[in-house]
Image (tube, rainbow, N blue to C red; front, side, top):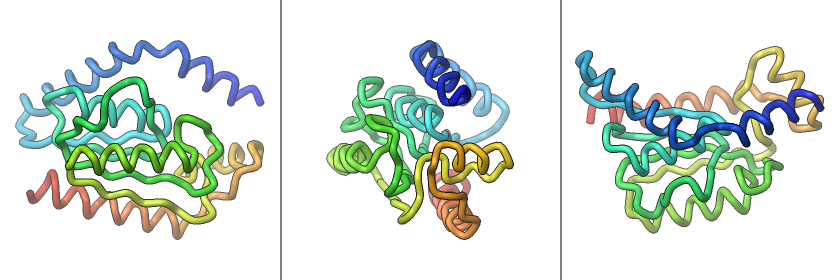
Length: 170
């Protein structure tokens, strides 16, 4: 699939350290504008970036990742910030978000002692939150389970509760 090839190209060509610095700079700017706490949220490659930024950059106060982890980018066993993770039980992206990778991530986060919420969604694959028309077509093209609005709603309720607890009303 042409889109999958392009996504892989972008992933391989990303300046990860530069992206981590950009995330931290955004948090610095938000705090300079009056934000007391800043969370980072990411999906897939962005989820991996969010996790790494929260692990190694000092301006972030919490992290939410959806189906993404880059094992070599940062040591999450040293995580000190609250983390919420969302992974599909049928995710097929090996080494990033498949069930074995998700289990290792959860184990490493628990080892860190940080506040961790870890959710697995039965019957869901990679990209299960992409409710756009393009996202729905991609799920079909890549032979992944279809987007389930009820699952998306549950996940977003969990995100809202997490942000209220750790960012808005700590």
